Amino acid sequence: NGGLQPRDIGGLIGYRGFLDPGTVTASFWDNQTSGLDNSSGGEGKTTAQMQDPATYIDAGWDFVDIWTFSPDVPEPETYPILAWQGCVSGPCDGYPYPIGDLSEDCCVNWGDFSIFSSHWLEDNCTADDWCGGADLDNSGEVSWGDFSVFAAHWLECAPPAGPEVFYDFALDSDPGWSTEGQWQFGQPTGGGGAYGNPDPTSGYTGTNVYGVNLNGDYNHQNPGGPFYLTTGPLDCSGHTDVTLK
Image 1 (cartoon, rainbow, N blue to C red):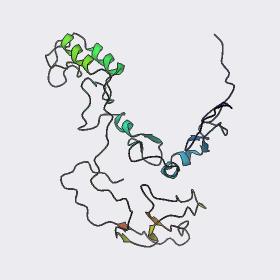
Image 2 (cartoon, rainbow, N blue to C red):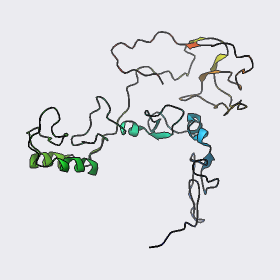
Image 3 (cartoon, rainbow, N blue to C red):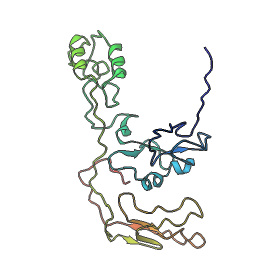
Image 4 (spheres, rainbow, N blue to C red):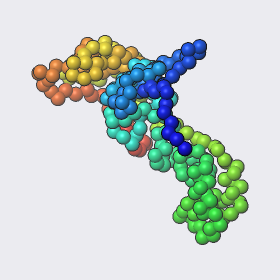
């Protein structure tokens, strides 16, 4: 055995061929954690920029159907993940996992087979656990009947659809919320940046936002306040585990 030395190293891409280099768009790498400043494609960003939703929203990433931010890590200390990964780190309450998905990662795969086989031929399965879920036919034992059920659902996947949205404000028009101080409704101009990142040039789902000074930085020398942006009443009756994002 011997060590391998890479010839072409890049933050996102090490090398692209000259004849057919392809196209790299809206792609980034963390030049701080990687320690790499050059790449054959993509755009290097600082860790703070990589954890800023505006980096991806301004680049056109789809945070409605494809991408999200991890629910396990408070923003902004997180990076985008695929929307279906939102429950991978733990069970999602009420989510209809595929039959045989013993690990509750939303797919029936080798991880589940490992759990299933560890309970093989156990004959003391009860309703409180059904032998870790391996007693799929609830017969009290893990045997060929359960294996038949498991095999019938092999490689089934059901990525979580995410939480139900029952209030959604796209801000295509001013909803008339109460504002104080420098709160404004409209399209941000991309200004500011003297005390951090500049403003975006659009909202999360459309053109407009509610923000403080849409043309630049907030007044840090005489901020006053606190100033509040207040919606009207929202009827959440009939819903549980409600979050505002």
